[in-house]
Image (tube, rainbow, N blue to C red; front, side, top):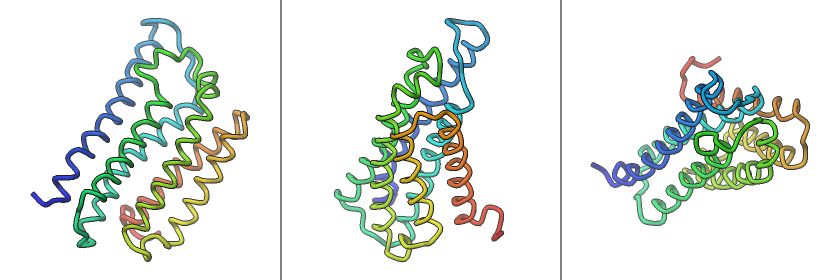
Length: 194
């Protein structure tokens, strides 16, 4: 086992806990929607932002394997940075999706109540992601597709902090879910070059 693979064990556990948290909370929501427990009002708006964070958790884990192609020595500084990134991503997921959705009766009202924390967390994650990307190399960091995505995420984060308009939040969430997945598919040649 290489040093990077060894370091990724803890990071994989943190990411796995985030994914488990989101999925188990959504499972609880399904039970509540079926009439087991107190009523729950779920909106597409909230579900789209959950999908975005879920996608970021999955894609973060995949993108970190870029380190194996760089020949970079994994030292404690890099390990600590990657753990910080994973923990920050986990915390944003927990802010968005409380344990078993117990605190949520109306998803829009809940989303508005955590909006400053969630979008503030997204902006912090965006800075961490930018550092991670440039640590992988200048050429990797200045890819036009990534820079536009980064700028779009900053714009949506700031707009999300300032606005309470329901349709705007839905549009931003849909844009980012689509854009992040398209960027990953493009960079990974999932569908070939379009």
